[in-house]
Length: 152
Length: 309
Image (cartoon, rainbow over all chains, first blue to last red; front, top):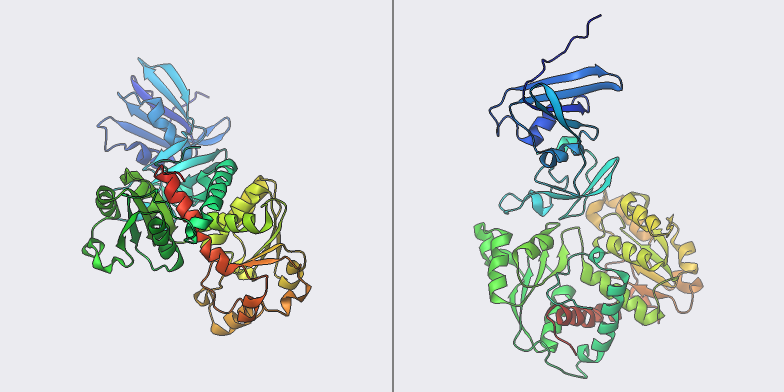
């Protein structure tokens, strides 16, 4: 049987592959897409693959900076970024969680100073373990368990 | 070792070597803290003492420390008379204090407030307690007290007693004692046990704490008994509170089988957890411990501002 593509190939742009199933929308939120971009974005969720289900995001005519995309490793640790030029994969990058996460996750402690509305402060977490991901608030030292639920 | 300009926010920011250095320096400060000697190494320096929450010992001992070293203190002990009431951010208050003084001491009800203050101040910031979070100068004075009385911290049998779940001092103290390799026993009611993260930290440093609710048994082999207050508001009903509190009272009867050189510590204020009859025994160290807040804070103020004895 002919293999059918769930979302069409793109000529130029970026493909984020192997996203943990169900997390594609959160990945877009972390990357600030579509707010920061007018590119066409296609999302496929629960796509079958050799190693189980996955989500895929394709962003046309925009090459994502791999370092910028690394922060999605928080919720999609197995994701890869493929840069596409003229229908060909020219660069492949596996996401790697940075040592610090700033302004992405809200601290789970309601009385943490990073949750104070009138303070000029962004949430800031130190990554203390990468697999499975464990992060610690730089301000109050609390370690949130439900990271995916706390994406700002 | 150079501490000039360093913020003192969390005990976890310090290595064992650095803590030892601070303890040694505080030991030299004792006659100055008692007023037996005087050297104005902080002359011309101004301390901003910003207490957004009530405090007796911490605030007074910081102010005493600054005065004993010839420095001056400005600040407040109640934020109701400040621009915070008008809605000013902590960041802005800190920027002001930074321009008026050389060192900032802050107590604040929100966790992480001192860390934030450190980001907005050029001057060194000393955390005097942030919400239910950290209180590093209390931790240092506790370590200093144990070191002074027992000549070492490692290998002592140390019992932490009381509200181990919400107690501000016990979490960082447990961490620091584990860093030194003390033998730890945690005694608390089942509902107020030491949080898992703290126990995991101890284990990672090679210390396996014993957890029990039997105080009598734990006291027998103890070298140090560190008691904390059990707060009434942590319990759903008064009857349960009274039952729990009643089972953790330190009195002469409990101490009958204790080691002769057992020392009893408490961050104070105490309510009913230590019977006043214990005050007269050689075990009672809590008032001396409160005094030790002065030499340790003198040492810290001196170190962060670059002054030396």
